Length: 136
Image (cartoon, rainbow, N blue to C red; front, side):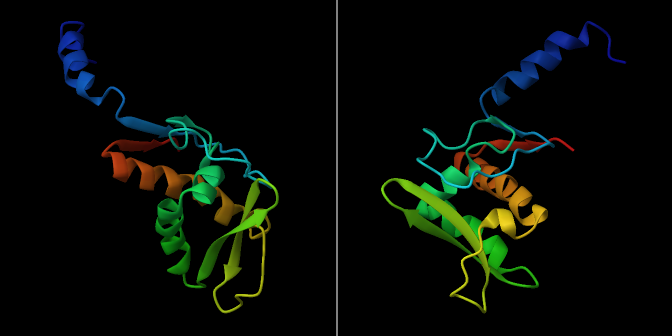
C-alpha cells in the first residue's frame, strides 16, 4: 500500500488526465426505440450507454465508423438510420445480404445492441484523443 507521502505525487501525475477520460458503465441501458435528436457534445463522458444511438443517428461520420465494425463480423451486418417524420430516427442492423430487411437494432440480439455504446464511446474517444475506461 502506498504511503500517504506518495499521494500528492500521484495526484500531480493524474491531473493532466482531467477531462480526458470517458467512462462507460458495465451495466448499460437499452437503446431507445426512436431518437429525437443528437445529444449536445456527443454521448456523455460518464455513461451507461445513454446517447449512443442518438449520436450515431445524427452524426454521419460516427455512423460510418461504427458501421464498419458490424460490416466486418463473420455474419456481416449493415447499420442504417431510418427517418420517422417529423423529427425522429431509428437504427436498423440488417444482414448485409438482405438490404431490404429493416430489423430494429434492439431486435437483433442483446450483444449487438450492447456493443453499440462501446463502439460509439471508442470512436468519440479516438476523435478527441481521450481515454475510454469500460467497467467490467
